[in-house]
Amino acid sequence: MRSSQATRRPSAPAWRTQPSIPAERDLPETGRRIGDYELIQNLGRGAFAEVFLCRELGRDEVYAAKRVNKARVYADSDIRKRIRSIKRINSEIEAMRALEHPAVCALHAAFHTSRFVYLVMERGGADLYDTLSEKAERFTSNVVLGLAKRIASALKHCCERGVVHRDLKPENILVDGRDLDEGRDVRVKICDFARC
Image (tube, rainbow, N blue to C red):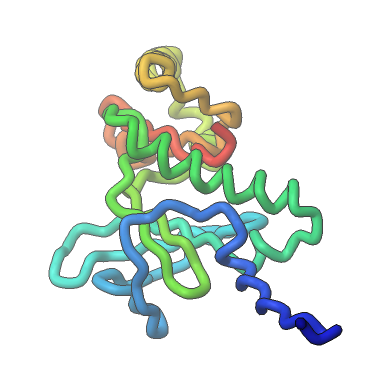
């Protein structure tokens, strides 16, 4: 016969009961070094993430690394909001893996540390909003038409791959201001697929 005090199983840790964030691998983090990558400079921050300039050790190429803070994602007491945030990270990784277009930021790698999820992607220029503010006189009708064509081509590619951006705005379109200064076709990259 069992005693009146039933033995209880310890509850699973929170990270085991939450939907997971897909990444290629889990890496150790020491200071500004994460696995084979080094964070160089902070480029900006949002509610859950920061973006850094980074480089892969042993290579000269630089990337942008979006660092999502797991504690902020898991901190919401409303489980529905927490799951929605995790789904957004999952969707962003899956969308970027599905897309391959010259006007879409390419995902180079995705991985975990104990505290963060990193999305290492192709580096773009400054966002269109800031570039328009600083160099409005350089946006001739030909420049604007060229940008519109490249953005439309990227959006068509997204649709063909089943991806809807849902947050397309000047802050999520990166342009290379040097192209404007030198009179070349302006390179454009659509980024931030967290709401797709």
